[in-house]
Image (cartoon, rainbow, N blue to C red; front, side, top):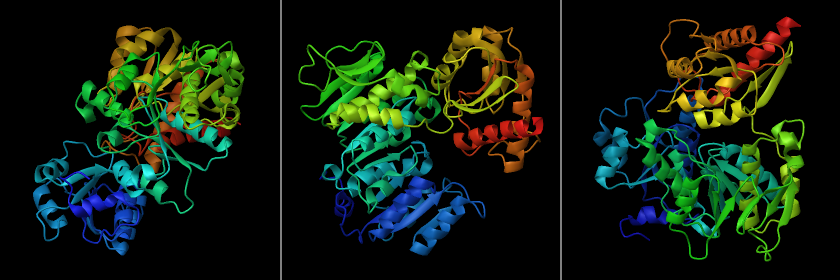
Length: 521
């Protein structure tokens, strides 16, 4: 126990501890904030929940606020940044500040409430740290943790499928959808958790000690939130801290290998590389269409164990044959295999799990083929690195791009794929950044800019405006396409300027394509 922790906060290390003396402030009314507040209330804490925004009547946030009010939480919604010191004093009850502040992932480190809390000496955690404490740390089910600029969700889905193929009760949780606090409180229990962690979540991790961990890749992203590339890199590197059995890195990405070299891991933890080429000793990789292991077998200095083949990834990747499976899909599969093998999963389970896995929604999903033109929803490509992988898999592309750039630039992306682009259709707050890159590096590519359908404020569109916007986007893209072309929604930007999430953006695109298909029929 750290001597800086008040006794009530230290008690969070146990699942069944008495938290009746704890005062807690939960920052954020999203899914993770709601789960954190619910868990703390369940254990007898006095909880205040704050959010910068007033929830809209009838929204999911309003329903969460109502439930927390019924459960006994104090709610302060809207205007939290105006008097953070007063807010902290009121949340602390009779004390000058709360014992604990649990910050939701979207709350920036420089938010006035978080800065004020740090100044008071209150303990500040994220929901991930709270979940680890609630499950009793390493006494609970092992965590296999995954981060990276891109591929996190796919890798965690693959990992969950492999673990279940081995007969384990595996839960996928974290940034993938289910809050970790809910996963560790699930009465059904789990043998192992496959955990997706964003850089936001990792920023506030303090004591999590995963069984095995990986950072899949590193490219500039969320630089506005973290304040720079180094801070973003440092947040990602936290995934390896206190890893107990395996620190899995991308052999083609020196930044991830350096993270492993720098990490403070548990003694005996092994560095394991994954590569889409032939593996060296201590790596997993691919040889002549096979996925192989030279890391988790006794005779790894002279032999390799077969884990499956590229043919097992054809359905997942949605391609015609093994030779068409994109390299990033192979890399994700190998990272998932390495994490599973660190837990002792047999090679046959890796093969079976990869074969039965499905691609996550809004990741390279074909919506329809209309008049010889394929419409693909890759709304999950929320940064240039992800869009790079999507574009690299195609030729003759009408590219639908734009949104919130989050500090990203587009020159390298456009320069690399200019020869693939038939045209571009741009939307979103930072569409001019993409347009400027196209003007510099692909001046011959026609560009159409689609503005919101009215002059309302920038922000999440209501259903009618989202529908009208995407109908115009799809119509413009279809007019620019030719038989054999692919209209690709790979925005290379976040969605929150116009949509509530990348999911909402992808669904709006897919719905617009289906409407066009219906009218054409």
